[in-house]
Length: 493
Image (cartoon, rainbow, N blue to C red):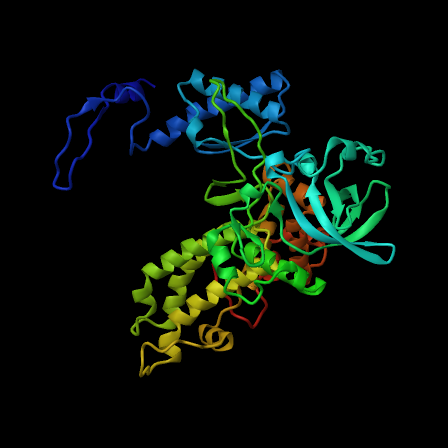
């Protein structure tokens, strides 16, 4: 201990001003730890560990239920209520301040997960065209958010609504038919709604959502009156054959147009989750910024639980890495086998980082396979086209040709192998391990990720999760079971 104290008593800091060796005058280090010293990480962890132990004990004594994750100085507090999260943050700030550490509020964010606001703010209320099936007939009208009811009707009409059927919750929407009739409804899943009489009806989405407050509909098409989120989307829309008024479209055409537009928005990652306006204030009165997603340990975490945003982000990062090495991929000296090994180590590892935890959809797999195919097509071109008369000619090779030369499996098989490898690692861990307990809870919850894992187990012939628990105890047998199918080579990661 005295040796470390003496080491810091004589510690000085100097800043290099230029590459030719010019240094600024040295000064005494009075706070923090020595940069570059091998003892620095250990000293920081010792101090932070003490602060976190004090924080955990204090929360336990004051009955503040909280869970936390920590990697170096990146901490995550998990709570079940807004008030409890704020109390836990105050205790963490107090414990850290006791040892000279401070929470950087400007870099701190809060996110609400699996919550639903009781009512959408009035300024954010929206409406859309729907078609409701009722007594073997169909009626069209406007479906509006319940919070915007006062902007379209007076109090006298609204008080005439029967809300007796809505016992445990308020109506979610106000349905106004084209003939002037109106009713309060509760929108259910899979195209069902319940009206004020308690009857359930099927309904179809015909148009796109737009704000009730027309001043917020900034990008409206002058020809067909459709509303778009950006000026770029509006400019693209005006060039298509679908720039037609909703009245001239049939029901099937309107529904198809809506599905196409929603699918395009989801594919390019524009449909972000809504930010839940939670209010958490730190011990000094500073408000923590609410977000719908944040990056933690190199992964984008969203409040809707999907992975599309992270996958698109990973594709962009991997594309940047691939572009910086274009001289290697186009080389005629290096063999395809060596290029594939470099691609696996440098590009594919970046692309599929943390992919074992992704909740992938069919569209996500198409995005990954598209990028994967374009990369392989580029680095195998010298082998497939050894004599190229015109280097400007577009390479139109099919997937069959590219994968035959590269001799690799598709991305879906690689994702399955990585998920199963990680699953076996968790199953072999101690039963009291936090990761093992989280896995058991996840598999028992019926979450989308657990369904993907069960499909993987069916695909490799393991069957149920109980069979996987028995088989994973033997590392060799589990590795053989989770391996990509025999006879098909796979790009190892």
